[in-house]
Image 1 (spheres, helix red, strand yellow):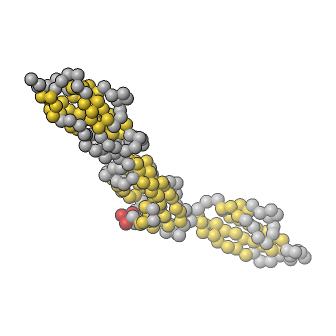
Image 2 (tube, rainbow, N blue to C red; image 1 turned 90 degrees about the vertical axis):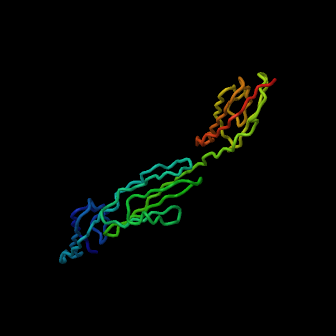
Image 3 (tube, rainbow, N blue to C red; image 1 turned 60 degrees about the horizontal axis):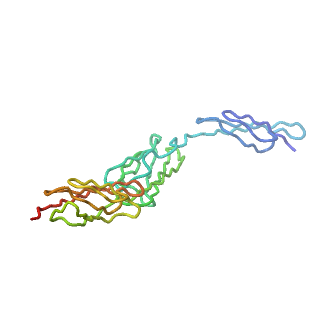
Length: 231
């Protein structure tokens, strides 16, 4: 039948009613707080105060991992970082593998040279044992690796002749063709094959750049064509 008078320093008693033998507290801030309770019996006898000191530690402050999350395959290094507390232990994982260069470091450098979906994770443990885990999903699209251009490279020149050239690429790609010394008469002009009418005797050239459905751009592929005078 006792009631309890609770005194909270550095926080608030949010219990209802507030004078039970247990309370729920919301602490205000990092630092040292205290709780004092005095029991009053059903007969109005007052017990000695009982106190407890509570240490409130800073939790990790990073709200996310900084760094790009969508890529085309690339051999360059890309940086990822968090804002960590001094003295924290930090572990970085790529999928389930520990990134050794990221042990106790607040940043890592990664190369995305293989297409796929990857999960980048960082665990932080502060000097006082407070923890946090952050995740990012990284999507890496395939960069086109366009085949060589197939088609005639040694031609007896007739102005009206049409010549087919083609490449192999990724499904759904479009192709930017540049014809020097001739014209692309294909419709549409951005398929994986073109029909070219050459302008004159000499050396012409064809260059193609593949752009994938995910907007990844392949390396240019070129072909020289020799056009010879007919009798």
